[in-house]
Length: 238
Image (cartoon, rainbow, N blue to C red; front, side):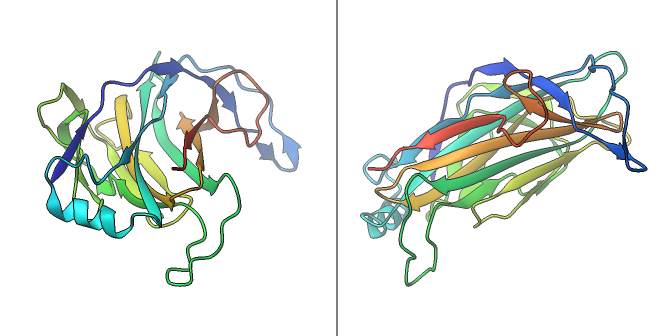
């Protein structure tokens, strides 16, 4: 088993832009900007290399078998919810779109012609835990956990969360409050991206949230509602 321990990422305060809403064919009146805030981390990533897997022979053999064909990058994302003045984060979605920087040919064996989310974590959880910056991998570069290791522990409550579309180019997570607890504090998302070895992968992150029954999209800077990502990252080819 191989473990990666990344330092804490930089979190940036985001702008919440109200999603346009149509009521009976007429645009609804504009709503005031909420007091609550969301901070989004800068995406962090690290390529998994067969020469640096800390003696994990099975993982080393797996990476070696794919050498020259695919590469595997670990990506960590995070957001921090800050409800204010009685407002409540009801739901949130963190979506990732992966695409190759340049067109690639279809693999005749797997029929995969671009990057995919090889593994995502969490997949389905609603438990209380202490999260850390340490992440563990199995013998096929699948994420086993993001659990307590020697890294800095961050006490938090993990709310109901589900991950979707593992193995696809457009994975996403859905988070939602329950009767006892609303979304509050830091939540992290982990992903291993498989890409054609020589082609850079572009990642677009989009974060959306519902605050007291109003939908908002989160941007780096104030702008009209559109399809602009909340954040972006690049996984370089080798």
